[in-house]
Amino acid sequence: MEIVLDHLTKKFPGRGKNRQEVIAVNDFTFTIPDGKLAALLGPSGCGKSTTLNMICGLLAPTSGEIFFGDNNVTALPPEERGVGMVFQNYALYPHMTVEQNIRFPLENFRGKDRLSKEAMKERVLEAAKLVHIEELLERKPSELSGGQQQRVAIARSLVKLPKVLLLDEPLSNLDARLRLATREEIRRIQQETRITTVFVTHDQDEAMSISDLIVVMKEGVLQQVDSPQKVYDDPANQFVAQFLGTPPINMFDGELKDGQLWIAGEPVLRVAEGESVPEGQVSVGIRPEGFILLEDGAMHNEMVRPEITGRDVSVIFRNKAAKTDVVRSIISAEDWNHISGGEVHFDLKPAKVYLFAPESGERIRLKLEPLAQSAPQPETKAQTAAVPGLAEETAEDTGEAETMEEKTVEEIPVSARVIPQVMALEAREQMAAAVQSASAADAGGDAMELGRMQTTFTALNADGQSAEVVLETDAVDTYIAVDTYIKEGEL
Image 1: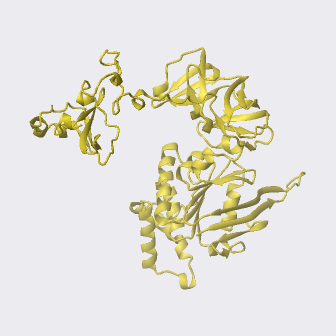
Image 2: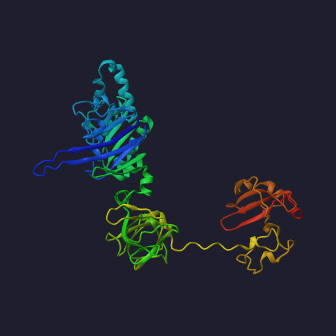
Image 3: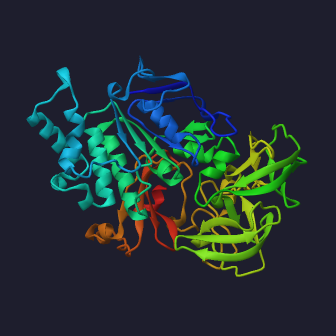
């Protein structure tokens, strides 16, 4: 069921001496596609639950309309909208068993929708199996854990086969481990039932992990609607950038001048050619994973301490342009060089750097590039060799300064020849154990050592005839050898 909110607004009257009305939801417009899970995400008091209650029908909007598919449900009471609601505190009836709690919505069906006792029992069992609590049907809510109570509440909302499932911060009362398991369970249930689901949360980890669509809100105003990864990688403004991400984005005072981005008086990136650069002060956001640890990096900082987490290392440092006391970067443990104090230098990944207007927080969209672009690679001698079909052989392993291009074809070992007109018609990789066979020995070749790998290419020689060339590799060497069945004179 597609959900459309069209210019939805909710105002509450003022109280006390102030009497200024409160706009909880302000001109809210967005669409949730059929069968998707959308997360309403934002800080406390931003209007998430108010929006959910208007979708459910518990609150009437001040203005605007709500559509389920093509049907305008703005004026319909909750029981006629076909929604299932899971509240933050579960709202289970303590004197009823789990089975009775789940069955309760079915007992309120009237007219042609009324079900027999057998049909209700079958529905209850199906819902209980869906959330894996079929063995708990005889228990009371007080005999259940928090996660089990949450599953009962979800089963009760699903038993009447709703068109829309609404979840109002359903995980906030659970401990961290149980919260992780339950949110995965909610995602599984949603994917199995394909019910359009609206999930309210202030936890951006929950929203990022299970939703198809994130709706970011601030003070009743819609900030951004997109997929979780898109919202993270391409935030609409500074609020969105700071709200999403763990650890949070690092903010700096910066300046655009001379076609470069400056932080703390140092150029750190340059603006791509063709971009119109609005020179002046900017707020710079850099994701923790946007730093590259380099000895001669463009950004100089005061080292505070490293935090080793195993796979990654968090490098904590100070920068005089930072808007917080310390800055946190995340680098791979493989790149960590055990800096204990003094200065630490970084280059920046342009895709992880965002610019915002200092006053409004609006995004300034500029394409940024590293200060120094990689120099073009020089032409290799293999491309300009004097003898066609020969590659350069360095003296690194042989100790010889002489190169192949100074040799004749006859002087070069067959195993080192390269046919320039190689056409990879087929290739097959074989582990060493598979190629240690009698056929290799019979053909006069040596059985390969463990750890080696072969790839055989069908290639063309200088006369246009096909020949097999074998590429052998191991952890140390890579070399090309002519197949033992091809005579040397045929190349």
